[in-house]
Image (cartoon, rainbow over all chains, first blue to last red):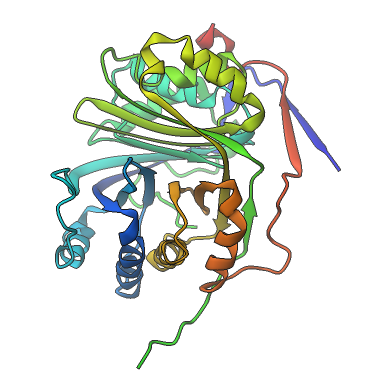
Length: 186
Length: 180
């Protein structure tokens, strides 16, 4: 059975923007042979009560993978300490860890984003036009996540809202995305 | 004594059709150049099914997946774009394995990386979204990945869809004034 949905929106729709501030970005470049070890360390973090806000990774050549992790800023030291004891061997001089703090996160989703063309272009074009650098982004399924420099998220939501509409019915049910703790954990 | 494995329950896992992975690492020269690939894909009306992007030290690094049916066209276009062709690599026949929910829990992330690493499966990309944890793997590795993950995670019996059941036809470009 095939389901066909046809969109003829004059403006892209979203179910709402969520903003989270006071976050830290941590990154590791690891060998693919270290994946099991890092997996265990992440499990231990979970057992100690840590949670993540976002994770994204890409293979960076020569059997290495670069993992980016976004956590609450208050948890940064705890996560770093957990990994410090097992920092990987120097991978041919390449930087193996880095962190950036504070950063901010915007995330939003909309109907069938992953099945429709042009959405990434709209988002990145709008931010580039306003010279807002995207530090990290991940889009999968119907969700878009954007990590931005500190104090850029509010302006980004304003300009994204000019191109991406929140239907009035949904908007009335939303908290102010700039409100503290507006992030809804699934 | 060996720690007893308690499997983590999930609500499901989904596997994509064959995809083409496009990986670009290029210096940032002009502010609007950074995501030129996404402008091209929009103009060609090609949906982006998965995307990661990061920037570091003046370079932008992005990976995205599109349906494999677009491979010849995408390769030809990128070959013709001087600012992209020397910075782009392609991995044909990849697939997306998405499982949900992750509940922002390191346990789910950790066991997934552990399981895939233990099975010697090359992870090309992965990311979290609101509820889902998605991995880009070689298409031929997807079944092995499901088996490896099943050692640590419980999937509902009928949750692995090997073929997409929903196709979306987009009749018009989005926000036409922006992209024209």
